[in-house]
Length: 156
Length: 256
Image (cartoon, rainbow over all chains, first blue to last red; front, side, top):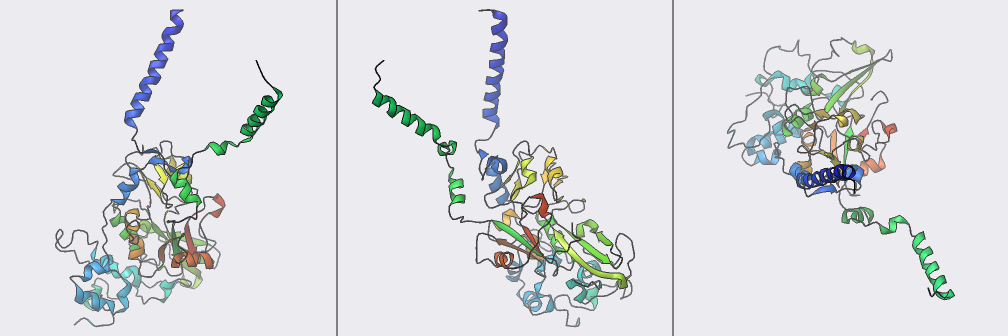
């Protein structure tokens, strides 16, 4: 046979073979069509478990209640009962071991998220009690007068 | 060759029968496909947003960023809250400072003072990934790094994503962004790590007003499914054919 025809042919075949070998080792074994179709389910299956293993940062009220029973029941009997502890105190992952204390945010901005008066019709925001932050004791911490765990009570 | 009339007719009939078999008869069903076709047990995660209950406190955005390790001060977020103020001259004023992370603490919109007397309606609209049934972001991925799980959530494989950004362009809702740390496409996962364990998403747990709720469409007893089935719910950009699975109560026509 004529060599100048065969030589490039062998070369091309070797390149394809090399590509297939590399592909065999590079592509994970669980890669393929795993969902309802190729269009939406072509992926590495273990990626789903990777996401499931992502750590939770927020633990929820019941977790806090185990140690802070008194605060949780005080708050649970108030208008603020629907606000999760971690909304103001930060996510509880690792607490109480590390960090042993969660920072207490006393800033006005935290309260103003809901209690800046915005008289909006058609939104529940208009019905919340609110202030004009520039006129209502500017510069002072809300918690000096209002108990955030039980807003109907004066600070003792 | 010996061929009687009988054998010829027999083989002709057999050949015709085989030729008329549809191609689908030769297809092998995967176990997942069979499960999906028969009775539809299992889970299909959906989300319900009640815009009338949302007060724009932004605690959901804060919780999402901290839960999912989205850089807190970078101008990117998996979920955000938009404020719509419609004035009597028909104009809509829309803003979302820092995605609503710190709430809406000023009546000014983009520095503009709006006379409260001119406001005809105003409300807040939380937004997040719609976990579409036909996700365009998944269709465009050239490497198979983003996909839909069997329970309907669209995820990104961080080890496989090459960061080309096609999916960010393809999403009509603008929920995808480039993760500044991992350098891959990033999106809301419905807190897949939490819902897989039976917990609520971080934003749902953080919301004090029940404006955000998550449910399972395949469970007829699920309270969220009952609302979606029996009440008037809207979705965003229905005309794109993406079949979004985040449903809105009290959605206004000015919301885009």
